Length: 360
Image 1 (cartoon, rainbow, N blue to C red):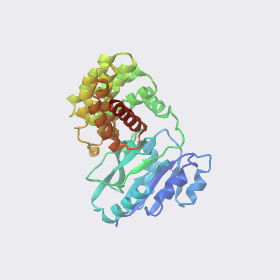
Image 2 (cartoon, rainbow, N blue to C red):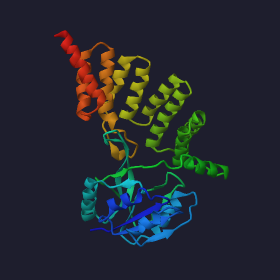
Image 3 (cartoon, one colour):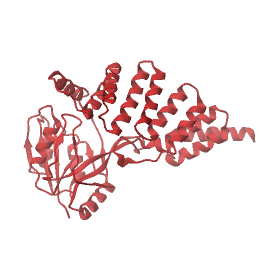
Image 4 (cartoon, one colour):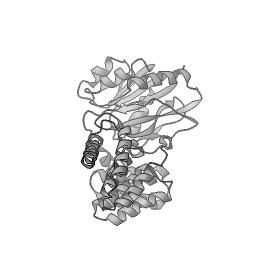
């Protein structure tokens, strides 16, 4: 069985840290907590779980802090969690099974990171992250924000997931502030961080600036395919906000130059045509979404609803608007397979039942 060091960086996390560490208790062989300047009860909570607590001054650089936490690890693998992450019971079992069976020649273990949820707790946004990194394998965190580890050697895709349960908002301006400080110092952003800088600008409603960054990122041709596809989508979102609907469509179609259609993009195209009341075209793209294979291991952001529920419920509405209630009802029932308790599905079911009663 391999051994695992849990390595965390924390600051003022007294409301979530115990929950995180309790979920990891019994799974890892040591816990390392690097505190970057807490002024609340974070350190006292950490002390209930480990004696290995270290102070490290915050330097506006997440990679530096994470590398510091990894530097104290003594086990075979380093695992990272944020304080508002948890391992659910089924994932704890899968993690223990992995520890017992993992080939020690594996350099990096990738695992799903669930970060978005609907009202019933179903995952709506997920992506793979490097979760366990071989200690002493020559791999380090890079990036002041949106930090990552570039995998080397053998990569293994695990079944256990980490669930992100944020309880309080983080500083919404932090990432943008760090990027802008780097640019002010004359630093040139690498392609991955140019992409994330564009996203930060988009989140702050600076549509034109974000669009320019994304266009530069794409024109340079140095980006990873998943970032390229996502950048095209964000160009579309910016164009929409700027009142340029045709340019938004063009940006979505541009994704096909980088890879095969993704269900997420098809649903966006369906939404664009639906808003124009072009329901036949909207139905085409929603139907195409249902044919797109879901491949979480490609590494990009995944919206599970786009591979089932969302196109089905939208096809229900499209065919209803097109005067085909039987087809609309059939798609509503398909949507119900994915989300049986969804209010929209239940409302539509009652509506179609009333139509049937009227025609009886």
